[in-house]
Length: 250
Length: 250
Image (cartoon, rainbow over all chains, first blue to last red; front, side, top):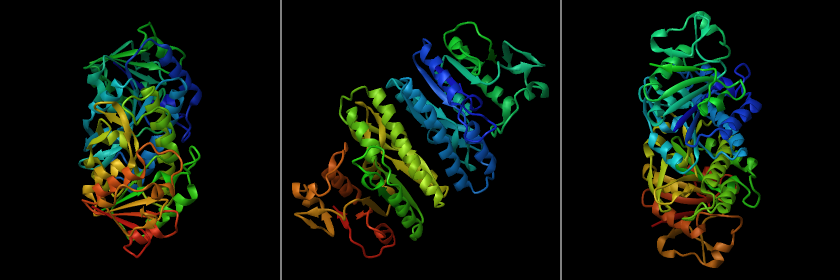
């Protein structure tokens, strides 16, 4: 089974609220369809649908502003975004099923505490494609918090042989050079490596946090980050062909 | 705590696919807002968003056609409908949270087997309003089946003091007469009583099945059916004022 994470930065224009990149997303879905993979789960982030509202209401902090309102508004924005993706998937005959992060996770002080893998597996066994997404969720200590797409990837990683993070960068850079392999001892990333693509709002901790989660995931499966803005790279990595990317290892 | 079921027949025009009755729904939300109730959960059915697709793909039978496609299409239609309702709720400052039936239930051969009440209670405790809805869901025997809004009402009934079914009829009729009280021994309803409002597609068993579920629910709380097409009836019943309706008792 393969986990495909479609990052908010490829699904949306991070600099413009609620701007879904329909053309790019269509192409990525066609690449998945064209590939030889069979069992897979899609996970997506919030991009310019999720992050601005989450930031406005401080939902990723221990003390959010107007938490009930923030939760309601941001979860609706995320469902709108998820529906856009599901529509484009149906157009290509991929039978996606919406799995909101807020219904399958429980957090503890901002950290993933439980994820209901069973329900995801049940949908998978019905020959549908579970499409889980970052969301506002329940936190046993804080009341609520943000569950990122990356948190869901961590929670599902034990089910998969391979994880592919589709982003808007060619891979992970260290000292200005794209690394074919990236291991935990190379952290943290320097200012120079981070600044290359630092645009828009990201409430979920930025690239260093993301790479830490990838390293966590790589304990369970082969883990890659690939550039979804470049044509055919996603399909090539799904089909085990040579492609520009970074493999993350612990 | 009060359970409010907004029937598909008031939320949509059952004779026209995907026609959401925005004007009526706005009024009903304002009635809820205007009432004195505090803790409540909204549950809604599928109306002309859910039923036509469920019928097309035979999703309510042991042997559906193209089950993966049917499941994907119908669940997306239901999420679109749910988003319409949540938008109108946000406009009135009611902080609704989307709770798809397919994520909180497990069925066994077409019957509700488990419902995750805990997650609904967690959202309620955060001062949001859980909005659960009929959906395609997992069935341990059939693979998938339809979870109706009424099934969700049954599953949540032990949490509530009062259940209000908002429909497009004044209540339940027996031998052509509207009954103030309706008890299980009055079942089944005759042809004449059913024909009054038999329009559009309903894949979830029609009025006799609905009333049986209400009787089940009335074991746990006071259970009413009220006409949502008539102004102020919903608010009146929420506020314990005199109103035309039927109370269902076992």
